[in-house]
Image (cartoon, rainbow, N blue to C red; front, side, top):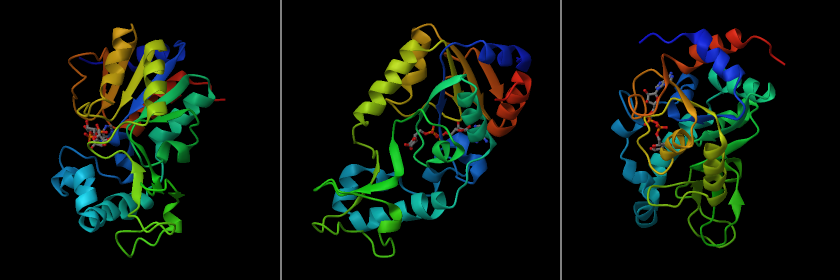
Length: 248
Ligand code: APR
């Protein structure tokens, strides 16, 4: 079914409380592989490295994978046009908030302000014991696992591991935004991982219209999506921004 981009652009322009819900797919054009699908990280690394129990019982092995994936890879990534358009949409008063599953900090780097990080952020490390927060540059990741300078405990990236709870404030803010919004723009997610994946569904239940941008159909496409734009996030978002026209 061919979707009329002009119609979608009008919907976005006339929305009252639009939010974006983003996943790894929005950062693929920044050089960060997705988790699933071809070339996905979970086809190359064992997701157990992000299992909380495994991390505590095998800190060095877990940290070796975490360093490669989240610090060597992510560390060099720059935001792409898709992140930038969402930041422009916020400046234009169109996007009120971004609920992201990503921990790569690229929405912040692109200039977005109202961001709810459902899975935390890789830009901080925490000592699970004394709760001291470290920036990656304050920690020597050539010696793994990194230890707290204060009490010697193994530091943990301050993002959510499998088996770990969602940060309460991000959860509450995301749910409130989902229940208030009239339009959700889903960008680049399979919709596989709960409870994050229920945010767009919650919005749909509250009466929102769902626009989805993805290179492939997702769990949402034949369920809640009203307008499916198949293609790359940066290309489609740039086209939508041009159609919406006035940039602040
Ligand atoms: N533009 C748009 N979508 C894209 C692009 C692109 N250039 N490239 C890939 N995609 C889509 C894929 O088709 C897929 O649907 O992005 C999605 C990526 O899916 P996942 O890798 O499953 O990422 P995500 O849905 O964010 O995973 C959710 O799983 O491992 C956990 O905590 C991790 O936050 C992550 C969660």
